[in-house]
Image (cartoon, rainbow, N blue to C red):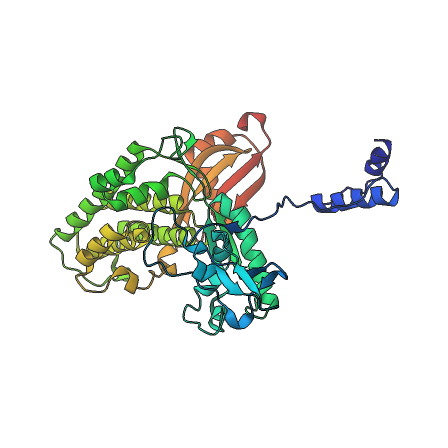
Length: 449
């Protein structure tokens, strides 16, 4: 403790990260013979053998004279015995036609290994084999390098530890053998959360499993998917709720009704002319493309489906309040609804496809279409709302032109009625302007705060 205190008082930790500080402590202790660095891995021996017929055969021959002998390369792969008839209690792996072989070393009678590899053994490199399923000359061919490494690995917590560890082991072995030329099998990892019921993990042993079949029959598969995507971020646990499923159903029915109302409004679909829009049209277009920008980022980069759905819900509320009075406002609502349908299609594909066909009246399906383009011009605002503070406390809001300079903003802020009341008789010592957010007037009188 004394020497630790000396090290702390020397100031060696100032401004260091945890890793740097840890390294400094280790070096300090090692120099004085008080300890040494050691890396511990929580690894156990991997029991890979099973007694399952469907497992991958272990290519070993057991010889009484030579011991365990590997199957010669020209005899690989070892194929499982074919099952013609199977009686109760019989194990095809113990059939003499499969087990009785000649030792490749001494030529004596020997017995083939009847244990098989566990399923982890094959699933540890399946991702690479999927990239070249037609390869007949070996485990992999050049197509594997065309697709690997995998862009995104999604799995449960057990995959983040065991399967990921085994897959990395296999991948580095295949790299060393020249079968692949990338160092890692996966680029990004998403560990998804568990599904809970009344606070406990769903499991057959606990008897708290919810059979989705009944909910699918009642509400449809899209509704169940929507609830599961909306209830929680993918990396967190999801608390199952029948009421939540019903809420998802109500939302989809509301979307359906808005699409049908739009289709029966009596306006023909027309090209949108951004130069002929009224202020309400411009506002809805801005929200549409703001939502599209957020949903695109949430789905493609962040994988936060719940926030993407929430943003679409807000847009649908705005569409419900929007009044169509002419062809251009009808075109604005058409654009907004088409974007809503396309943004939701990865989550609720079936109902969205039906609405897509209704809105467009052509044969192209949503998967055949490109993702909607964000209109940067629609995102631009002629005016912006700023919060006004006096000595750090909110006293009002103002709507100002987006291109207003600092002097204009200062003058407009002081004229806001409630702000004017708080700064009356005070000296303005400083004006702090945070672009697109707020104006803070720092005044001298205490009563202004």
